[in-house]
Image (cartoon, rainbow, N blue to C red; front, side, top):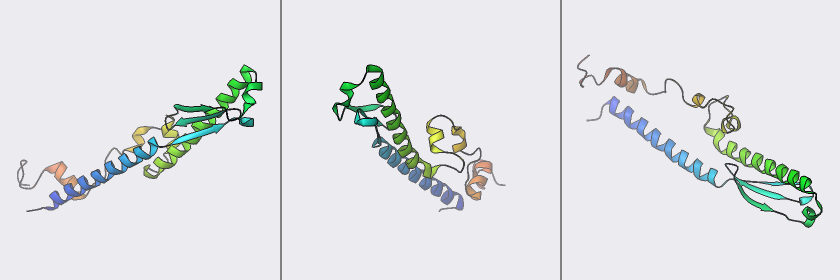
Length: 145
């Protein structure tokens, strides 16, 4: 026989399962993210993954041949920074839907936000479940009330 307590717990478990599935799907989509940055004059093109790992460096034109080493280095660094920024924007867009108000995905991903802001001190739950957690089942191991 099902009680309101049992139903509340089943509802919480169903919510938990949905959230896990959504998290797995978000992770899959994040793994597909890449950002591309291109230096001026198309001298360098850099592609990075969601975590900023360089996955490709290309020289689409012969412009790099006429560049001094320092100029080429600066062009590569600029393209890399642009690619990382684009990848971060995509990841932030994918993850921002599940964040509480006032918590920016970009800030969180760059370590500028407090991750504890994502989870409340006191998680929301139906009153029946809260009562069950605090007091046990009316006929359960903590005895009648």
